[in-house]
Length: 354
Image (cartoon, rainbow, N blue to C red; front, top):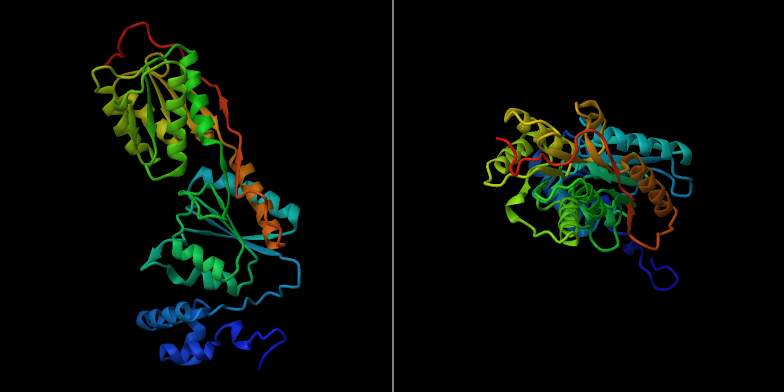
């Protein structure tokens, strides 16, 4: 059959029966794979999945596309962090305003052999989600292509890597945050300022270190390579990096840690050396998580508006779901310094006490 304009009905894509025949399975078995059922042998699942991708099968979602969207997915890296709590808070408030409900999932973007595990994307389309928010997700090119192939709108919140062209994302002004943190320490009189950065591959980590270097250059200070240490955005590795900094012939009198958790790890290392914060070494964090306020002394940090980032991402997603693409693909929200008790003028001695 041919429609007006010469478009074949085959343009709508292969049927599930065609996919089943290609994979050498029954239609019910192919349907189980498409719907994310677990009662399928791994080898059978592999054959069906490869046939789906090879033939360009597009699963028809169960929701009625003519109706207003009511459900979206929020995929987070982990549920066990105050960071995620702030993101959930912002997304939930914005979703309530938009009349939407949210399904929250954690850690579902991990891959095996280049494909998402457990058919999470098929489950997403099966339950009729109209769009997805990804927080700190490391999506592969195959996963981006899969989302585009299924025509599922999505927005990235604080993407780990540079997104592909055209992908909408929301983040914080990380470069400016690095500048602000370093300028604060410079204004207090520090010159030996170190930075404990996150993973080298992380987009935000590179921007924060670049801001740190820019602030030093503007102050006429030479950048010292030994003062730049990379950790994993966790307390334990940051504690190790802080010990390395303290073992230098000229240890720093101030440290800018590129996350609050790393700042807490740095403070732990200082305490293990018998050094006081901020009397001996000043420490600045980044995020302004609740634990930054709870520690003693309270942590000076750069606040990035996590809840606002999530709310902004949801509003952008709603626009995408209605076919309205924003003019720009990257939205950055401002950061600001929250000055507390972990920073002060450098000690009078020429070197930090061991």
